[in-house]
Length: 234
Ligand SMILES: [Zn+2]
Image (tube, rainbow, N blue to C red; front, side, top):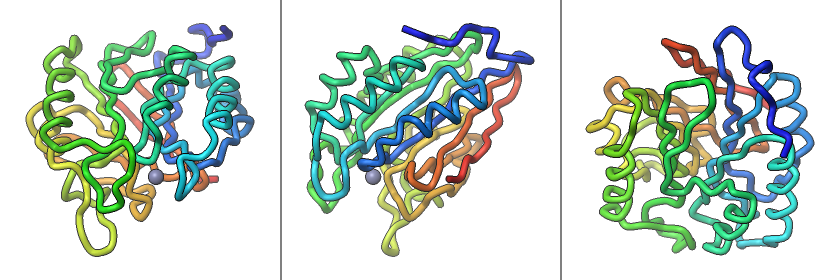
């Protein structure tokens, strides 16, 4: 597997590309081109691979992830629209981070991942009750080794600028509660397409809605003392 060595990580800054809500837009070439140009060796994918309105072809997801995983280190979680079988594809490429904590070489941060969403009115496939999200994520926060944590979820926390659609807040109350309790540095999320690029704060925690891949993504730059983000608009 071709994973970029530390020489690409200049000035003690480690950059990670974060994308989400793929929805059938399997343009691996564009993603790899950006990674190449920016010296990025890790890509976080925050779920919803399926095209709108159906689970779609798993073969397309497989080919997309295979290409990416050949060239970069991938960390993937499912979205609420993805079928449970997607976890098998993640496992095949050793990129499944759903309900797991990951680390990136060169930075002292626990990256805590959780996919799917809270219960939606659309009865999508990958949904959890709030108490299930709370229990699973709390365990990950409690097991964190670093003081610095970054939370990566498909679903945004409840009652922010990042979870507002059709006149109401639809985010997860469990993600909000845990953010208040454990105060990760940043919560990257997506899911609510109306909130593309929106940001907010829950106390000290910065909330960033990454948004649909067809519009863009985010580069996270991790330094020794601070985190910066840069939005890439397509
Ligand atoms: Zn979506």
